[in-house]
Image 1: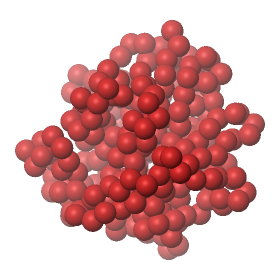
Image 2: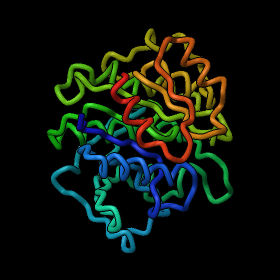
Image 3: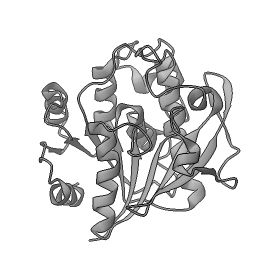
Image 4: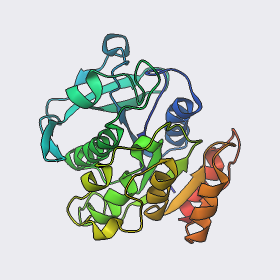
Length: 265
């Protein structure tokens, strides 16, 4: 059965260098589109993306909203481009402070940016607010990459009564840990939004490392996929312990397994 699937990707080739994550960022939407599903695809507008080469342009009607994070207004800018070979349209979440003047999740010295937690929150909320404006109602939201790890929480606790997301199922793909440092101490406080309160987050440590972030994503997902053969077994075991449906790494020919998993949840 054809579904409407929203892909929230941390990386997509050809806009950023080839990695396992960026490869799947392109391959998964492409496979699902070719299988007859209706898709929308989002990623951050990382500062190393060449806008001219990628033919990105701003979508004025979707831009202009301010998102408040840590008591500061951050303007949301939406850009769009198409991957020519696949006819996949990609929406980019942009902001001068969080993305334009940076590299990706790591700086020029290979160190995680200190405000990566805030950037992840801005990205997640930016995607969800933009989907609302598109008046498009996804059946499935599929998150790939830790930068989207807060999306399941927001869907289930902050946007659950929005018509766009009321009946949406959330799938999280887990990849090997890319984080080299913990998120900033203010991350947990910055997560508080609408019905997400300090009480919502009491089970989590005050400082989030990669495992704590994975647990947060898992707890609010309807299904969890090991998207790589080296995905941390402890994370998948945690998902199983919570009674959440899981899919073991299906190998390179993943399309049918993913479609069956969508139906299962």
